[in-house]
Image (tube, rainbow, N blue to C red):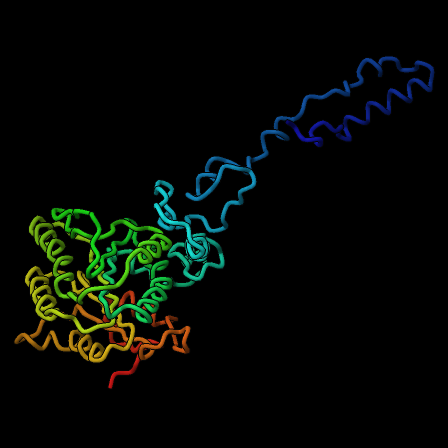
Length: 371
């Protein structure tokens, strides 16, 4: 509807009216002036109506994948918001309502300008650099130690670690992350031809879903770390070999292992075999990374994991690639009990230390200094 200003009389229109009133006072002199008086009802100028732009054009409404067509919804001030945060076509996960679930969703899943973990797009627009943006080039997989020794404090520390790591890795993996446990297995058959191992939870895109899965598992059993890593890497390396032979690239794998104990099997041979395979295929240095994240204070665990980090390349004449990194936290003391906790460059080293070697060489804040 035209605005009120479009119907007002211009100064030129007002002048003829003053001539009419003057003619009436002079008792009809210059009657010809009355015949030339312009009509006060004027058609609105096309320029006054067509020049207005629509502030709610389809281009503006469709720019944000999280926008709601309701007029009450304010379009974010950061165009190009990361669409991977909460995909519009993702069905909500099945879960058992608990007091912690809404908190996790509110803390990590609702995008806002004050979000603790900025998306790559948001950081770019603010002029900064997202330290986790490199994660977007990887398929991230979590392998959680659910052996009997994890019961108690170690299990609580893993929960704390997941609450910090999960929002980061889910925001930067377009097809969602995968989760496996050492002993617990899901009914998922996997997809060997696609490089996916059986028994895990696939394509998780919400931090709250990771928490829900973790809370349904109870620790118990041994520590078959080597077997489980082999089960995950074998189909991936087979698919990588096929893709390489056909001249195609494959998305790199970032495997993060959260554990507190000494493995009950031979992890070293599994990792050495994988490193040799990758060298034979002439794969990029970051094609596969295995990050061991130690919680708790299990005797001998720290030394065993450090040997995996530093000693594998020395087992072969001429050496093999370094694809392993380890992080040990706060001497087994959780942040709730006075430990340093998971902050700053510690998180960065945890999620990227195995694939970004400059982080592998860095001692993270909160990490126990090696003796």
